Image (cartoon, rainbow, N blue to C red; front, side, top):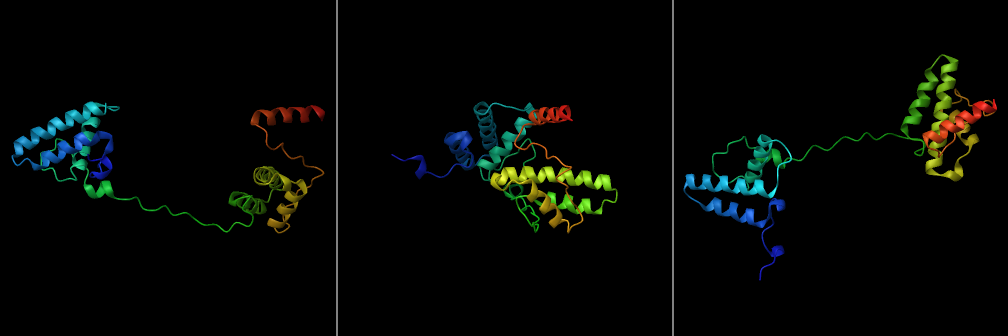
Length: 198
């Protein structure tokens, strides 16, 4: 008895070994017309095995391309559709370039550092303070995610001053951090309560 693991690996396992054997037989047919009829029959069987999820034209194009692929592009017939070249099918996409950034504190991330660098360049004092406070809330949220034990308001204020070379300051007496670890709905409710107290 021969197990499937001992046989040749299937090119497209979704069609099964039966289709692979039919294609292998079609490759051995010498008469071109007979080979064409055999290929047409194989495509009809393939269509019945994998029902179409697209329109008829796209499905037909897909099936003929799969037939060419199963035959290792050796089946010499008149294909009714344009077959995607083997080189294009087997080509691997070029690796994506991943920019490596020098991040001072990885738990805050590169965007926080960029935001602080931008805030230093803003001339309007109110806008600069507003950006600083937004970044401070994000920094505290980052600390909550990475290490709740080090989540400290004073640490965030110190880090802002350190990363901005003393150009940005966060006055903890005048600033209240947004609640961390809450859903947007909970944050909205907390904001309403703070407004009522005022």
